[in-house]
Length: 115
Length: 112
Image (cartoon, rainbow over all chains, first blue to last red; front, side):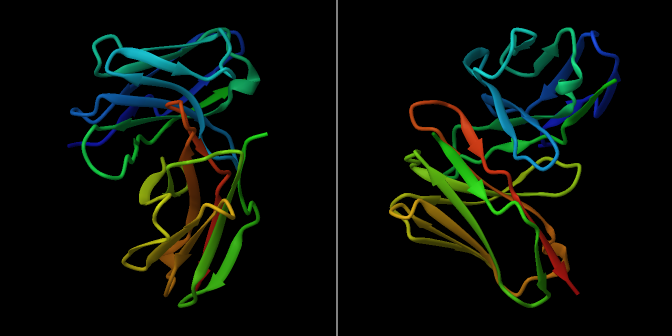
């Protein structure tokens, strides 16, 4: 069990460019979440996958954001036509089906800076 | 409107004292509430979960209470240490959805 990993850890891009982030959850976890976190705020829910199915997506998420989990393992989050307001830490978390605590295991995050 | 609030001001306490952090929520009916710790530049780490039918939960130096009438959870760290310095987040699951809602977090600093 190597934990949740995210790649890249840092991304600097120019406004208008597209970016894609990857998340590799803990291998036996079938539930995967994406969050966005800005300075001084808690994580803000973006989307949820159970296996390969995207079961919930935040209404705050614009059409520029899309996420996939094609084989129910790793997931990608793409932001098209980035804006300066997209600058944030993007966190991925996974959760299994067993255990009493429903806890999410977070990755280290991808810090996005849009110039 | 729905909201979950934590004291956004940093809490500074002396080593050895008990730190108490507050989480209040409005217009949610969570079946449980979670507490996480977050260090700078890292993802949150789960600490404790307390269910709506539980008044108190303990784990080592940590204690969480849950009052569904007051719609409040209190998180205590006893015999605090400088290594406890971090941001502490409370979270609940919005009923009928898969969405988890996090508070803004309270930054705790334990002074040696």
